[in-house]
Image 1 (spheres, rainbow, N blue to C red):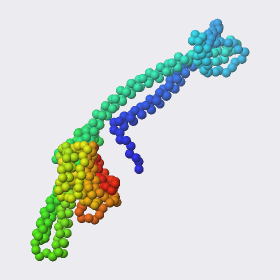
Image 2 (cartoon, rainbow, N blue to C red):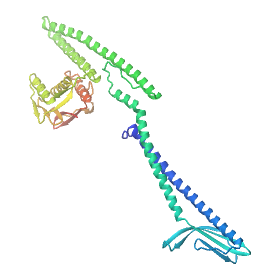
Image 3 (cartoon, one colour):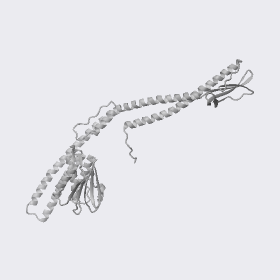
Length: 418
């Protein structure tokens, strides 16, 4: 499977592509221009050499005095003709007191029954200077054009993609619980228009399904609560009455416990569904340290297990107060239910976390499943297997991190805030 790399913004990615393509094209075009201008200048130099040689030949045919200006023009009478040569050569220039590069043309002509060797040279250093000047001018112009075009292209792309980014932001802020439909920005771009249209259709369908499912869940929960309450009341009446033997009493007591467990499970499943559907939208600053202390006091009244509270710092979180209470109650209740040998329970509050530890004879067999709904280590009837799953969903909702570890014969649950 391909590893996911670092995410890059669309405009940055298109700008990077534009930059790389532009640099490559500039580099290649500079090389092509260099050799083209170099060849063009050399051709012009050679044409000038041949032109000068033709003038010298015409002057000799006209019986004018031989003309020689070393090292530019050299004219010599030779016994035999040789091959025409065109080459580069280096000659010392006394005016510059340095060696200079020349382009040299050597031809042999028979004029007025004499064999002449005509050597014509021209300095090519100036042509190199011209070549460098041309390349520098080209690069300067291209760079200026590139900068202007780059920022123009970036600004244009931002304007072109603005409806897309605006609609993306509205999608991020879209809530199924909101009664208002999602409002999309209109765009003249066909693809953006079709995307907005499909998003509206999809969100409408999702919202309709969500409302139907929410209504169904609430109806089922409500319809279950009433018969369960009636059954519970009737069983209590029977238990409180006379004419019951021990076997009947045990059966009815077991049925009563099952009904209580079913009622509790129904409430917790409804709560879990509401959390996953993000129906808790009330936000407030909750003092978790104070809430934990109050919860401990409440539990201390109904249990003989000693619950110790240690606070190093105040701990607060921005969340729904009811969910904060549920999170604390579920964690402490879980510690009490699964505490071994009635050992003390320790609740500790630090900088950005709080932990709850209880005694345990051994670690959990499958700790990776501990926050999964309906997961239980044993078949005991005192747990629905939903308490820690609810804690996990609450933490996920607000970006908290909940962890479990077994250390020094202690089950430890840690909740880390942002």
